[in-house]
Length: 594
Image 1 (cartoon, rainbow, N blue to C red):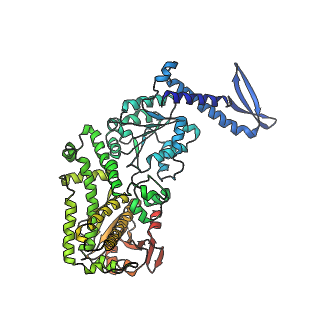
Image 2: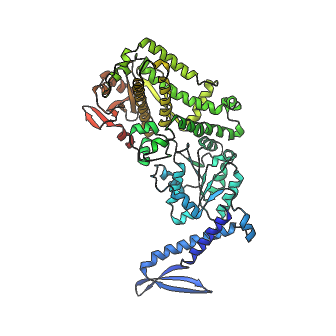
């Protein structure tokens, strides 16, 4: 903040001070009746004035406000340079700091938004009995960090608000600059300090202990925020140890997508879920994942460059490990982007090959044939053997065409490790009966990113000459059907992910049989019970949806291994009801209750 703004605030505070009562309130028992008096010192003597009981509380608040303002004025006067010439040209703070009325204006922009559930975590730290620790609020871009900070500041009591400062770090700032400003704030009586984009400080990771050991240990409550998630994790491991509380904002469950943004519908979440940058009816047009281009920009700036920035600033760039060769050739960001796209291509290919190849076009042909609105037997007329051969070749070409740099398995493993640390990916187990090696399926916590890339990949496939025998209308219908299958698979992933995160003491996995599978099993080892689920991207109920749940042998094998089945559920997009022994549960209702 510059001198002119600080001086203006000082003048405003002094004007307000003149309007507030001096002294304190005392009470006396006169003839068994309590009477209140305002007492103060004036010209070396004491004065008092009788006050009516009805205004006592109002006067108390005004007296407390006077104390706050006097302390604030003293703090500003301490740090203001002396002399009119210096006041015109000297910067009080080295960094960009918002306090007072400027901070109030900054906080107002968060008033119109609903709060994420993690709001309470921050206030518990600020006003609770937690000392000697800093609070770290971190996550990828557009996941609501600054809005949370604005909301916390906006709801502060006046006494706390005037002890609060917000620092926005720029790329030219240093840890020494922040240290000097923190000392000034501390001397001026500030208690609550929010520091945004603190990982832009090149020496943050190596010097992060400054905030906990020097300032938090003296009673200040410090909230550090930023998009460089790995930087915070490295600093926790290297400098902060157990002197920080970490809160990650990257994963946004369906519940918050609907409750906070006001956007309802699981298909909307599949297409755009993952960020909280916008709300309202224009969300789908302006979302970070509205187009392939926007998705690519998000992956590049929010994820790939995030990882590279952290590695550059950690241990003097000595933590690149297997990625050093890519970094030295300026190809690390491209490699990270490639691997993220590869994961999504592999996911898309698995859906396509499972239904096109493994089932000899049967699934898609049958689905198109029985389409309620526009049935067609177009896929029955395709030369299946030629079609499948061409599709396999096309899938391989699409993958290989993007491999402009050589990426080894060690590169993939290390980048996957960082994607997990960013909370961007999580593995879901795929167990089997008879027992075999447990497989793992990589799920993305930002569904909009996965869907956008999958959609673009499918459309590029269908634009190939392989499909030139189909008319434009037929190609569009095939694309819609394929994308519907992708949404169905993504619905499985969303439910598996959110159920796993909501049931940390239970096992959540898919269970594969020799023929068929349970889309989800939630097993409680302690009670020796489990629940089994089928997940369908459908609004209607059909007998086929629960055929595995009704399979006596599958259920017996499951109970032998995981305990008594206490519930059989079909999660779908229709109405919640019970049909025999099967619970049909609306998927949105299910996710909202997690």
